[in-house]
Length: 421
Ligand SMILES: *Cc1c(COP(=O)(O)O)cnc(C)c1O
Image (cartoon, rainbow, N blue to C red; front, side, top):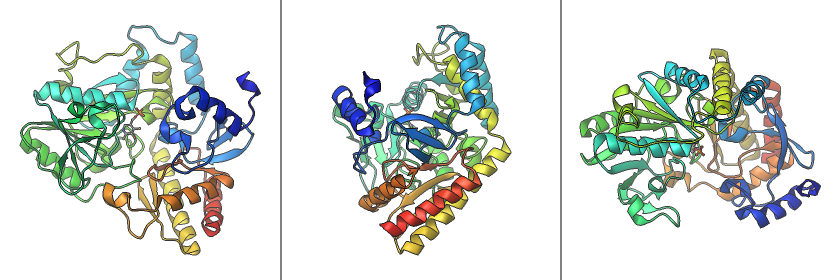
């Protein structure tokens, strides 16, 4: 019966009757850009096709999770092969060892990794581990950094100085964020000796794309060492997109723990966190910090993840960076041509768009940019066949499927769209 619903509007109406807001992750509802979301029928490479048969060049790419492009033949066949051997066992598998090998081999200093089911689980569990390992309760996060939706990480930012966390969502009791300190990004906070860990996006990519200021990560590392606090890199976006060894390799700063997600699942649900053997041995069953999962290390997800990681050779990184560089200059000249104050921020293949006169360096500045203009640009692009994320603070994601021709097409459409605003 649902199959008889043919348009995005019909499906959205039905979905809203059955699912809060019609979506299973809030940004998908288009609330911040307005209008009706497109319902995806299928996708291939750099393209998504909606249920009305409309084709879009996709700059969402599942928020970076499908770095090889949609339905990449190798990834798809790895998933099919795995599925034929059974989908979940409640017992360890070869695939888990293989993915752990692929991750550890890439990251300087990483010795052990635990696989989970999402980025949220990775950050949540790594914080529990940091607290259990250090015997301290307090944590520090940065305003505008997103670490998934675990209670203690849903603390909103106070500006200026580090403030005690205020709950950023209904349903998160103050007690849950009472030990969360929120500091402005790009400034090394005071770290007390009661702090278990500092968690940071090494390149912020959830308030638009904001790179770390020179020496920020290095100085944060030193400050953590002085306080005996663990440094956690949330690499759920940067992990294996920014460089072969992720942001640890890119920044030459070694965190104590790193969290992964998105890219490492090749488009299937997965997450991971890891560090040196000493810290990781505090985790059950070796140590006292409990962490578990019925579907953790799922064979379909590990097969897809291993295949996707193997596609990421040095040519792949050159391709990603060049595609992003070309988009950076193409978008920049499109806005210049149209006389619109907009800036493109780029770190490696991560791209962000800010409608304003200067590039923000923290969350307060990012929020001063023109969200309404983003919404208009978003719809101008979508109408012409380019799907960007339906939110002003999301990154644009290029993947291996974005060829030079496709990038040229995006740039041409960006020019038309900018001129139409
Ligand atoms: C997406 C994201 C998460 C959350 O991952 P989920 O798989 O959505 O739970 C955490 N941290 C960062 C930096 C992310 O971009």
